[in-house]
Length: 629
Ligand SMILES: *[C@@H]1O[C@H](CO)[C@@H](O)[C@H](O)[C@H]1NC(C)=O
Ligand SMILES: *[C@@H]1O[C@H](CO)[C@@H](O)[C@H](O)[C@H]1NC(C)=O
Ligand SMILES: *[C@@H]1O[C@H](CO)[C@@H](O)[C@H](O)[C@H]1NC(C)=O
Ligand SMILES: *[C@@H]1O[C@H](CO)[C@@H](O)[C@H](O)[C@H]1NC(C)=O
Ligand SMILES: *[C@@H]1O[C@H](CO)[C@@H](O)[C@H](O)[C@H]1NC(C)=O
Ligand SMILES: *[C@@H]1O[C@H](CO)[C@@H](O)[C@H](O)[C@H]1NC(C)=O
Ligand SMILES: *[C@@H]1O[C@H](CO)[C@@H](O)[C@H](O)[C@H]1NC(C)=O
Ligand SMILES: *[C@@H]1O[C@H](CO)[C@@H](O)[C@H](O)[C@H]1NC(C)=O
Ligand SMILES: [Ca+2]
Image 1 (tube, rainbow, N blue to C red):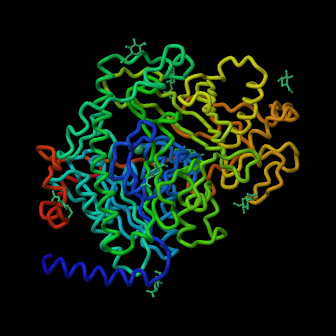
Image 2: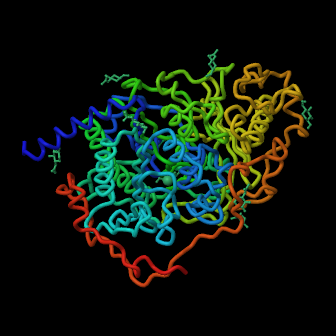
Image 3: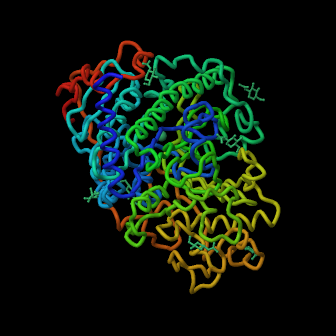
């Protein structure tokens, strides 16, 4: 061992004592990928994730993103609110992006501010939100003690890495692959953070395995190129669904033809490229674990692995993409290792991205009475510590059986070889999932007026739409209950998101009592609600009108989505500013930034240091940043 290395290790020993002497508040490291599926099996091909997180931690099988698109899902996680309350509903104007997050004032009051108030350093490395660009990089996201963020349009160019540190002039990291840059920077931040007398929250957010630009395959590090050659996407379940199933799908989906061999081939290549690029994420996991261990803080750090939204490849005949309510796009990988987390365990308890903010606050020691008033989720820390293999059964204590999933705007096929149906813009919908033990359902209402109901216990691939011409009385009664529930979830806020049944009680005076700890409700879960004695209650359209849209719009318009329950919903407006006239700034360029001539990330870059990366880096010139236009 060289002298320098010895001294470094000795120094690490000192900081370890300091870190341990100050308090027991655990650190939180969120490794947050982009567009990673659970259901296509990508995590099965990540051996380090398996070894370091799954075997040494707990895997949550029933965790959901509440909106299957990058920016809205990130905003929702960071504010702890459903997208109908953030109103950040898309990746660009008018639905939303980073600029809208700022203009709405939401960036003044979200997770990093709260964690910093609780005594944490809060840092973010990687992809933040769509719309953090060359035109607004100087307005670095507020709240964080440190940010180093990918800048659009380079966020999805793996061999053309441009990032801004704390809103300073963006830097071009020539000669490196994005994943090597992010890994190296994240490790450096762990080194820095572990010497501070504060616990820390660090998000590490690579763009992998997102497609490159529009819509090329994700480009793995050169050392992993071809490593997944020959792997095939599973042809089972809902892949290339039959005519009979596809005809039951709503909107643009039912227009799609069968996948042909050209699309199938492209899907396999895409599948392979995703697995190959995820090997670089696996390296991040390995090095983060090792680095935390080296600093003596591994055992007091929660490492949380998840993604912003899921992905499909050929499922329901869509060759590539997200934006759909089905399980591939919304059921997320979630693996947690850390203090009091059981090793090699599985939990089937339902949860959603909106639960992270309250859970992190509980970890940070914030009293729930001091939580922000607008959080829609709930802390899952006790679930994290006590994994439950059984799904909730009725009667429930809490609301965990209902997951709200929503969307506004256009669908997308991330594969130029497949023709887009003309009505692909008609992709706004309201969805809820019942994630119970005996009963599992996916229920949706689309802006086209179409309705879907899948029994996800009997039909896990969501192929047989029971809402199409329901014959039997039980299905009709079930649809009445689910419609009422969806009417509640689509505009729920705080306590009614945690328990939408509060709005649906049979006794008139009790409806809308929205205290969390009201345990005396008559109906607490779907099974109870199905009692025939409530048939006329749920059949009463003056109480529970059908969920409807007037038309397909690309953003959340209040009148377009009426009626509501209650009639005048808050939709989070009390906690944000109007955004009606916001616009997304853009720039005119006079010089381009040229990416790496050949793919970087060869074996020699596996252990590249920050000094080596910085040595080749260049600040963007004014011409490369562009002039406001
Ligand atoms: C521990 O951290 C807290 C929160 O940052 C700080 O206020 C306090 O001074 C630290 N205590 C010691 C003993 O370092
Ligand atoms: C999709 O299914 C249809 C109907 O069974 C079949 O003709 C076609 O070959 C399938 N596509 C692929 C790529 O397997
Ligand atoms: C993890 O659990 C599985 C079964 O649940 C078992 O087969 C395996 O040996 C366990 N692995 C470790 C490392 O404990
Ligand atoms: C219900 O949940 C509350 C809050 O999580 C808990 O305090 C209580 O013990 C639970 N009751 C039952 C019967 O599980
Ligand atoms: C929805 O589809 C209809 C019919 O194809 C089309 O006229 C309309 O423009 C679409 N709406 C959106 C928002 O794309
Ligand atoms: C439900 O309402 C319809 C009319 O809207 C009526 O025909 C039917 O009898 C009602 N069913 C029950 C169980 O109340
Ligand atoms: C959502 O944002 C759009 C675009 O800024 C705006 O027109 C609309 O009024 C907002 N909706 C709500 C409910 O705040
Ligand atoms: C990278 O570092 C690890 C751990 O120090 C070492 O085992 C590995 O051989 C190194 N790889 C390369 C390519 O330098
Ligand atoms: Ca995404």
